[in-house]
Length: 231
Length: 309
Image (cartoon, rainbow over all chains, first blue to last red; front, top):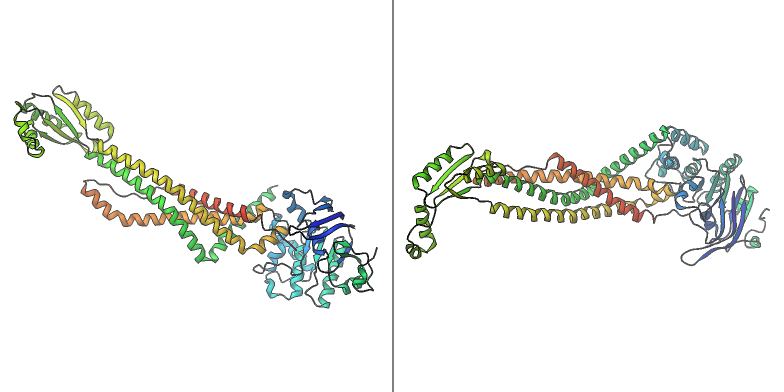
C-alpha cells in the first residue's frame, strides 16, 4: 500500500527532514509513526498524502509513484487518502453536514448520495443528529470525530492521522483509537503519527520509530524502554 | 451520464448561489466595490451617449443647411424674382430669400471697408443670389442633393453652393470624441479589471483555510476557482446595471437645459439614453471585465495556496 525507497526530503529552507528512509506498510495494516518532534513524522505523512514530493528516492502510495504523478491527477489521488489533523481543520462557519460532505462535493457526487453517506459517516463516528450544528458548538472530542467522518466519507483505502489524540484526554483518546481500529477491521490501511507512547503500547500494533529522518534502530533507549518496535 | 451532467449543473448553480449569498452578506463592502466599478463603466457609457446625441443633433440641424444659388451675370431682377417664386412653390423648400446684386453690393460696401475701391468699378460685379433653406422633410443628404441638381439645371444659374463646411468640421470633432471614448473605455476597463482583481485577491486571502481544506480532500483548481469567478461575474453584471442607472439619471438632469438649447436652434431634438442594444453590450462588457479580473486574481493567488499538515 505504501512503500518508501531511499527517500530524502529537503525543504526549500535547506532543512533535510528525511535522508534515505525505507519503509513498507501493507494494505490493511494499522501502524504508528513515532519519534521526537522534528524526527520527520509530519514529512512522512505529507509525502503519503502528496502534500509534498520526495527530493530523492521513490514513494509509492495506492500504486502511484507520487514523485512522477502529474499535477492534474493530484486531486484524484488525494480523494483516495483520508487525512485527520490534530487541530481537525473544520470550517467553523459551516455546519457539521457541510464539513463532512466536502470531499463528496468536490468529487461531484449527487445530492442524494451525499445526504445518504454523510449520515452513514456521522453514524459511524457516533454523531448522527448533529448535522446542523456548527463545529464550535461541539466538544473537542466531537470536533475531532467530525474531522474523522470527513476523512472517511469518500471511503478511502488509506487513512493518515497526525496526532489525532493530541488535544484529547485519555478516555477520548482511546475512543478515537477504538474508532480507528474498527475502520481498520473493515480493511482501511491506517497510519497514525503520535507522541502518545502509552496509546501505542496499549494497542500492541506495529510502531515505526523515526529518528532524525531514519528508522530509529536504537530509538527505544530515547523513549520508554518497554516499548518495542514490532517486526 | 445524465446524472453526471445534472450534478455538474447543480454544482454551478450552487457555486453561483453561494457567491451571491456571500456578496449579499457583506452589503457595504460589496456596495462600495460595485459603485467604484459602476462609475468606471459610467464614464465611457456617458461619453458614448454624448457622442450619439451630438450626432443625432447635428443630423437634425442639417435642416439649417442652406443652398446659395448664384445666378449668372446680367440676369434681370424681375427674372430673379420669378425664379425665387418658382423655388418657393416647391414642396421641398421651406424659405427662399432673394439678395439682389444691388443689395449685396450695398451690404458689402458698408461692411467691408472697400467703399472707395468699389466706386472705381464701372458695373456691379456681384450676381443675384437666392438663399434657399430646404424643408425639414427634405433635409436628408439625398434630398438636398436632388434639390441642388434641380436648381443647377436652371439656365440662369451659374453655380449652387451647399453650406456644409461646418458640418464637416463638426464631424471631425465627433471623430476625435469617439477616439477619446475608445481610449477612455480601454483605460477604465483596465481599471475595472484591477478593482475586481484586488477584491477577489482579498477574498481569497480571507478564505485561505477553506481553500486549503478543499484542495486537501481532492478539490481541483477549477472547483476552487469557480466561486471566485462567479463573484467576479456578479460584480461586473451589477456594476453594469448600476452604471446604466447612473447615466440615465444624469441624462434626466441634463434633458431640460439640452432641450432649451435645441429649441434655441429651432430643433425638436431630445436627449436619448442608451438603447437596449447598448445596455446589452454594457452588461456583456461588465461580465467579461469582472470575469477577467477574478480569473487573473484566482490564477495568480490560488496556485500558491497548498494544504499542509
